[in-house]
Image (tube, rainbow, N blue to C red):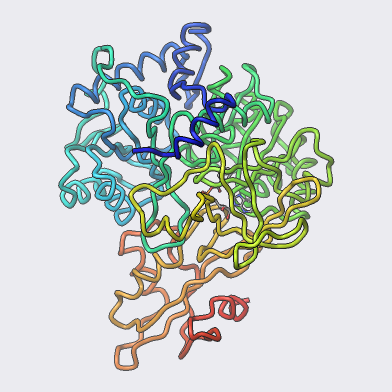
Length: 529
Ligand code: OOB
């Protein structure tokens, strides 16, 4: 599978962006140079670089011993536990490709990932956040023929304990190259089915390396991973991989509440962390109440959803650290405000791209370039932005221009200094405090309800989350009228993650229409407001 046109790949190699180094080599290198230094802290467990390296070797051997081969897929659905990195690096070392599922995903998402990626194995925790992942895994295993086994961290029940995958380390006969697909990230999505994002070792390592430099990480850096570890922001911007790349330490938070996070910042002397806007504000409120020594914290990164200027002004003073805005996407492009930026820029923009080779266009509805300062669609191409989703040719024809620019679906303007300001969104998505909900995915589930004639899911403004979701429903006249709560339960029973369940359900007799007769979500959004 070629991920970039050869002409571009050659250019990115020549420029030194792609170094030909596989992602897991960072662990091997630090294990040799500073074996005893702690790489990952998970509660009372502290894994050194040497230990993480050994564990990755053993897991790679275990995967291969079970018959998995370079290029085979697994679905990785682990919460923020140390084993996340054992499986991630172990799989990469064996050339096995993880699909980076989130702990919040449920039957609909997990079975789809397993089926679509033809995954050979599913890695889960026994229980997390009050949910038994083994029960879900049993359903998925029964439904997906490719899936050979479920591997469990914790009490395995009737499945394979992860201990069984820790084999005697052995050289990998057919090791992956840096140009290979390393893993599949998940798209926030705007379509009925989530899309998989093919990231290579070369492209991802470049974004991690540059992100670490932009954020001035050093071996003394301690990163608190409070968001789900699999998400692109805490994984690579610069995130856990950025810190591991420079030989620093990752501290895992089991959940991101202010009580847990602030206590960990104090106890582990955390220097940097990345969060979504609602979390940042909740932490700031808790910090203002006092009781925690947060003096180690140097940088608070906020991204995943728009941070208002008012909120931005409060955060630094409340937490006693610098603020950085991060505007990124799992498809690639990541923008940061920089240490040398003026305060105004940090408070009012979402940063500028990582790389001089990031090509950014702001265009009108006909793909014509707009001058700086005007709002338009953000298109981008570059050394770590994908050229297409995995096995999705029809969708790719719409989501990318003919010359390979990704249509981000974001509406932005560019300042004269080259910083981007996110002004809105053209994609049919709800950004619920950083968690992305594809309207069509929820609509499809609701349309299967016998009482539902038609449905449109839109974003409504929310003080805390930025946006919440509202489902406008037209009922069938002949059917018994369901209550809103019943329809919400129906979405949950459909197997979708909790954050996709509409926050509100409104019954209407018709939808507003656009000039050409399509449902006008724009008008529905203003009604909701
Ligand atoms: C990050 O990645 P995704 O893939 O979950 O979501 C990407 C989308 C962007 O296209 C944009 O619509 C929105 O999330 N977004 C922001 C934003 N950061 C992301 N909208 C406004 N302001 C921001 N600062 O969310 C992600 C990936 C890597 C780093 C940071 C965030």
